[in-house]
Image 1: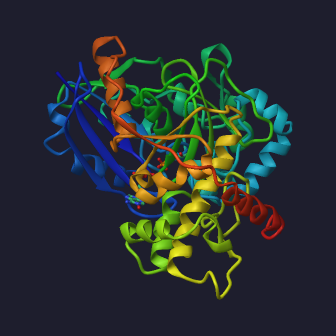
Image 2: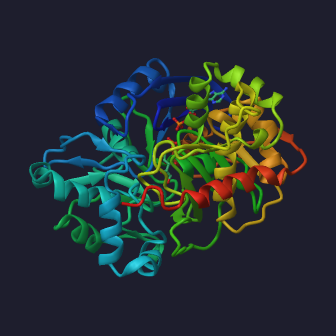
Length: 456
Ligand SMILES: Nc1ncnc2c1ncn2[C@@H]1O[C@H](COP(=O)(O)OP(=O)(O)O)[C@@H](O)[C@H]1O
Ligand SMILES: O=C(CO)[C@@H](O)[C@H](O)COP(=O)(O)O
């Protein structure tokens, strides 16, 4: 029996078709999404159809994992009202600040939802819609997350979501195993909206047009956790469009500083997570700056010394979420005639991205004995070799695979059989290296020196 897992992430849709009993991948495909921080949901559906052509129909069950937080506004006929605003769209930063203040401050938000909302959270996008597009707001009857919408389009019985993705909205509470906070929607939007039913872990929520069982799906980070064989205390660092550091725990978290988002996972447990807006694209941007391919960037970076001769890249290229600097941009600092060269620039790009994620991982307060490194940029040799120097612990890189899609496939198998299957842990390679404190020192000094640069 075969099951399919879909990862509808920021840059593309990836699908894996797996043996339901063993998790062995028998086929895989992908298709790109349009660039940008807003997207017509139809583009995700087209990518799903393109990547899934001849593949999805072989699956007896399917689950969709999606980029978190995106606001899919629907009218009372189920039509999309406007392009979805994505997790990395920072236009609702002022609304985030206003909502935090209006509803009792950071402590109150962390207590109510597990998180303090930044511009990524759906609730802040709802307020932005109400304030800036009254016609679209007036037509909006329901709000879904990207994976909810795709699951509905695939054949779910009504609008559904799961507690993992729901926990990134800003209108979900961990109380009573997970429930909506309609009063938060009303406070943000001015009135209540139809929200999807929160399905239980492993629940089947409908049937596809070819008769496959449909799992509830979840957020992409929750699915990654499901796709990896994590050991207790493991911290995962994912280097995709977003950078994330997360772990699975038994109790909800409530960090009033706002750095750690107190998400739920896809199994009934919790997924404290720290997210940065800038990760893999820091490397693409650095490579473009020095006229190199990603492979050349890696070779060049490995030729430079730790600290890149004093050159530091603060990687907040597209604004930043952790730290909360939505209007920030990147800063290259410490340039001299002695260090101006492609090797140091390449190394500064890799070090900047990793140092930012090491700071994020620290916010989890976990003191892990290893870091599990995944995501598109984890295939880079320079990233793998420099990561232990930055994190200061061994870095375990599971065999490159689509772990989000694999987690979704595992959830599909759960919906199909009623049992979460035990798939074998993927083979991995562990990278070790001397800790190089200079890398994080340079990053922190530049981060703190630029604290007031983007204040309005
Ligand atoms: N060899 C490589 N070196 C560095 N980055 C890479 C490499 N291969 C792919 N990437 C980057 O990985 C990113 C995609 O990662 P992925 O985890 O699929 O992202 P997402 O899930 O957010 O769509 C792209 O930005 C791409 O440039
Ligand atoms: O906003 C978050 C997590 O809170 C992001 O991690 C999104 O879920 C997008 O993920 P990728 O497309 O980068 O995988």
